Length: 425
Ligand code: ATP
Ligand code: MG
Image (tube, rainbow, N blue to C red; front, side):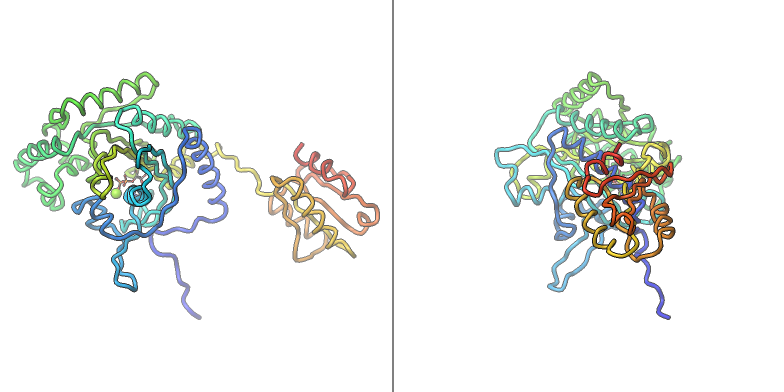
């Protein structure tokens, strides 16, 4: 027998029972986004490789070792998107969406990174991304944080997440800070692992986020980025903190939070939970005021964030397993048996759907006696069974059985409203 072909490591099927939970969570998130006036944008999953190299930076974890890049049949270098911001910026430049106008956008979909799979870290994972273009002030930084806080409230997880904030200043400030940090880290070169030794010169800021106790100890006395930030950026950050205070959002200023991609500046933030082990960041974002220009558009301030949906769902399942008592997926299971009942049943099902599109109805196919069909209705978790047998054909009635209480009632087949009223209650 042929060997079964399995899914690719780190890429997972979402089975129907998972999909119900995903749909529910997506609905909640979309509703929050809509309430802030954000619009959806749908983007390709593959882009030209140089887009990511230019946007994210050559010396970043993602570009150096995590991208799924290929040559297609024409020999073009293409990459499965590892994140959404680069493609979104490409699209708004390409379609001139920021000419004399602001944009508040969101998207949802799969991202691909060739990482070592573990809990909360996959090779195909999903993000809900938010990108806002055209606003300079800390007001918009506040808005996207408020928006995420509202998402957590709606999902019942506020108690389990905390907000960490930092400002990494402008590119120039960062260069000055970078030099000071390199000078400091050089003194401890012998104590660093190979990866960090290499990073001292290529991306020293990234060393700040290293979790190893040895490194954390070394970093306790490292120069602090806040000293290198210019007045304007300091004021921006103070403005953000003040607005968050007024809005009642709690946060921790984490001076070591720098984020892994090159495009960030000024505000950076993460929403973190201690319930998921090492993969505790469920949402991350920041300003990227230079990226639009770097990708060829005219200078446009911007800020964005991405929610890691797998981690969000792991957290919800862990802390709030009962918050989504997902309703059975069917309201009605339509059962029929006997002469002339099939066409009657199919027509009745269509009439119900015409009149009440929100009602979830499955018609029994594949025959079977009543007992067997009731067993199927039960297995599927239907709330009600509608039964049409030869008696019902003659009388014009339909038998409605409440699958939980066992109570039965006869109602005229014609009277769709009465049937549904009984079911919806
Ligand atoms: P990490 O430090 O955990 O690797 P990151 O800084 O690489 O995260 P971002 O690029 O900021 O992550 O992506 C935003 C969010 O997307 C993360 O906070 C996380 O929730 C989620 N995410 C990133 N990579 C993965 C992955 N491989 N599997 C699942 N979720 C991921
Ligand atoms: Mg990563």
